[in-house]
Image (cartoon, rainbow, N blue to C red; front, side, top):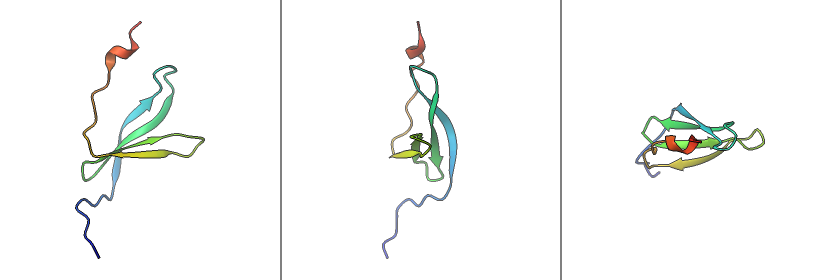
Length: 66
């Protein structure tokens, strides 16, 4: 049986994902115990997930300026 380089066992929610236009929460950002991040986007009460090995990017705080 092949061994996996990075085995993930637990994840912790580290941020909320909000819609830029409405401000409504649309998902959560998780970080696994191996350092990987994963976004869980809500869709009709069923989360969709996207895995990313890249470090999370900084939020664009200028996006909400009027």
